[in-house]
Length: 315
Image (cartoon, rainbow, N blue to C red):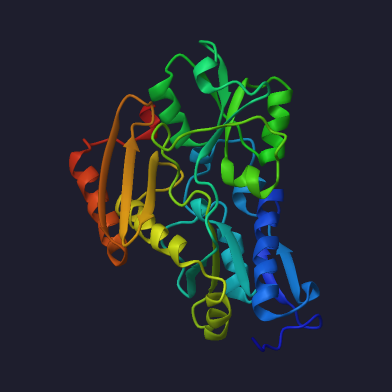
């Protein structure tokens, strides 16, 4: 593909600055280098500090609002400071700001959660009353539902920070995403992959999305060469489910779409923040009807959920 990007005028890739975010930006760059037949120095990775990374001393639910890990990056994209933005899709709001478009996804990694202890023991062997650290409202609710005997503490920070907290004895265990461990080649971290039947993952977990300006049609053509269709189909269903439930990082929602030939299967779950109740729905549809299926499952759960079901203040 012929473009005017070069070492003198590099294609600028916006990203958060964590090791995982940088690994995702590097993967994006590597795929573009191949598809565009350009050298590495024809691309520039621009690190942008976001609210969710700046504020580490409070739970995400107390910071409030959507886009805690994306807003400043999207502002840079709109202002022309970067040409594209690379995101962890589980951090992305379901609606993009006016002028931005999210229509490129890289092949999805392992979607499962990883249960982490320093000695590698599984969740079932964790003693009663053990301390588990997590900042995810979804994981807190799922874990409390399954193991109400455990004590949960807030656990913010990137993968390396969370591992250090385990070493310092802040908690006996934590959860990470298998995708993050794999992308960082952290093979030395003891982990137990949680089956999705036991712990349904966050919407879009394991997926990388690339955002662009909606009127940048040339960039749309460039990105189409690295877009993974199957990931796009799965995320269309999952994010429609989330949008219907008006979900955010303040809401315990889980969901996963899988493809089987020409059929898309979707499982969805909502939980009371205190883990006292879990409600699930599942269904299947032709591949092209994934978004409609997501909406349908979301509406079913909304119809079933009593008033105040998602109120985290009651947890």
